[in-house]
Length: 478
Ligand SMILES: [Cu+2]
Image (tube, rainbow, N blue to C red; front, side, top):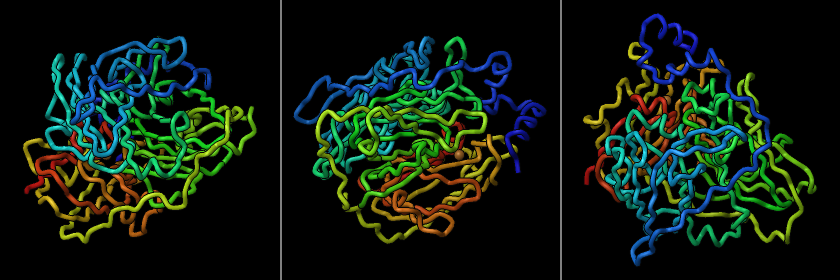
């Protein structure tokens, strides 16, 4: 089976370099190393919450312009990034269940874009289809009904062939839906509910952001700053954690082994809290977690680490600096959170095999490259299905990140039934829209196509994979 070293040999010998956009960065790595950075020197910003341009009787209306800006990801270095709204980290949109949102997106960049509301239950013309591209200078309105439970969604680029680099260069932002059930629980809220948007990057000594292979991206950013520190009061916090990396698998742990409580996943809250000492998150996944910093004495610090860092990489992600609480902590984590919808019996079964295709040097689904004119799956609205997803690549030692695949469905939240025949743990059994499918693994998911008809995509969310070909079209008929 092919590993990364073979692949490099292959591309050098076969002259197939152009087939692998990520490999083009390699030449530039020889002359200069990445910028050195000292950990925990920058304060972690909390992304701003976007203010509606208008509130009509029908919807909250937002205006966002995509533009390039220069920002300090590493203190003292100026890095150009692509942004939503001219800010990095990009502003969060906060929506309420049942209250529609309209986002007018204007493309002020020099490249095409398509805005996908990841995890959103939206009509196909507003889903940010890869071929529905907004040219430079163009603008359009996206309509989001928010007819779904409270969840941590995100909006990110999805323009075909450009999505991976566009997301890497900064086109990623949070979109949080809340609802009454969530608000009645008493989870930490307000300034005690904080997003952690984690991703890797490679920043050169002159501040340039280089788009290259995962193993050559040593910098870890949280909310747009490299390994920042964040001051927390000695009390409970609700952390809305996102893996915004284009293709890095994170295994997050507090360095002292403290247990955290997961209360939600991609598509919303879990039925009951799940205590964990490690969060495994592939690209695009979200974890809703409560951490009780009240267990620490003020003046203590605790580092969040990535146990999946390469031996050559720094495992530190960020540092929490605990200070005295300003008042009593009235938040709580109830034993029961929400009722999940039942899983209807499936009438259709389908198989999907994800693998690297040696002849084309591309990643494929069921031996096929993505063709926007081809329909891969035809189904009907209301159909419940079970999908068996297999990663046919074999395990390889680090730094072969690329042999991990995961799977993302647009429109539908699914339930993960089992992995290699073993039911998944309680945190992964919630509402999901991305599931990790590691080399050799087979994962089964259950999903139902509701509300909308039309064409959507499903794909690997390792974006360098989907951005080339590891994507398929589902057409939902009435
Ligand atoms: Cu993949």
